[in-house]
Amino acid sequence: MSDIDDKTRTELEAAAFRRLVEHLRGRTDVQNIDLMNLAGFCRNCLSNWLKDAADERDVKLGKEEAREEVYGMPYDEWKKLYQREASADQLQKFATSPAAAHKHG
Image (cartoon, rainbow, N blue to C red; front, top):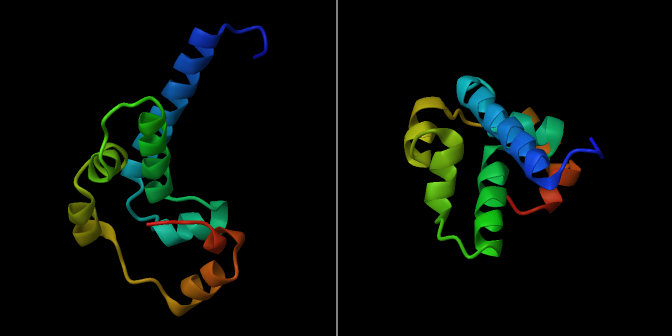
């Protein structure tokens, strides 16, 4: 992709991000802790990264707005509908993972 201009690269990256978000919206069975334990990031990380990008460009985007962009609904609603209590095994895996050292939430 080194021969692609910056505008096209940005458009391709944005399309891939949108597809990832749509995929995660459809996979409500996959819990954030599962994502953290396997990949080291979750839906909340994506929303934080989106907010960070907005902040870097002086674009007003609140934390809850960023979460709604990723979750496709208000975060509290998603939690009520889909979030399950983490198992002891999931919590233990997370506690010993490199992801546990990073800020989440």
